Length: 223
Image (cartoon, rainbow, N blue to C red; front, side):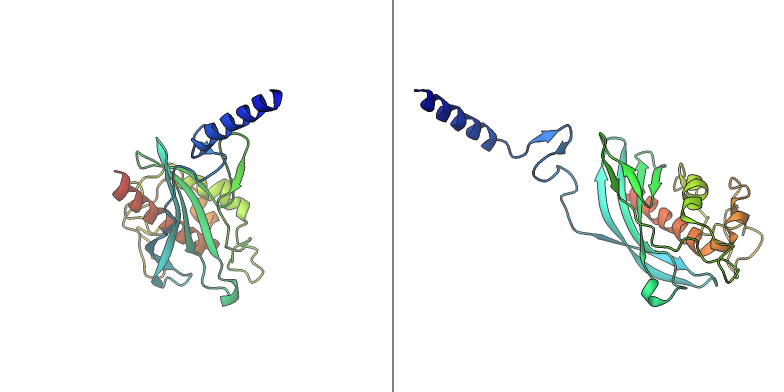
């Protein structure tokens, strides 16, 4: 009788579990696929890459990940930052960016991000050098990755498509030319950052342009 009761209990458990497609905690599943981002197709988003000599070439950025939350959308966008290196070092950046439904940048990371609970993920990848190339042969005028994280990226956080309208260069170029190119709108809120990152223009300019094309995509699809 005891064995029969155990068998019946096990049979009941199996039936109960087989009726569930996934076992979930909160909004994320422990087993099976998550409810979002099930489409594994990538999206190509062209952007105008600019090198250190001011030459612009349209290149293909790749939207690797897109997940819509209640108040914001998560993205991973991969793009080529610098073409001035040897071809065997032309690694691609992966920018993790969150954008509020209102259209403002919530977060940008090229490394670790927090997830619900205690989990952390390396959602971004810094494919540029550290330090970045600078005017000096020894790169002493370049910027390290942590300086981008602490100083430059915070300037981009909070920006909207409207804020960056007419800004295609991280330069004070509404008056002064950058290799013959100008901004249509003057940057007025960067303080000394423009001068501080003057030797890392390829990295700052292409990150700016990557953010802008993702904002454009976001605006088209969510607003």
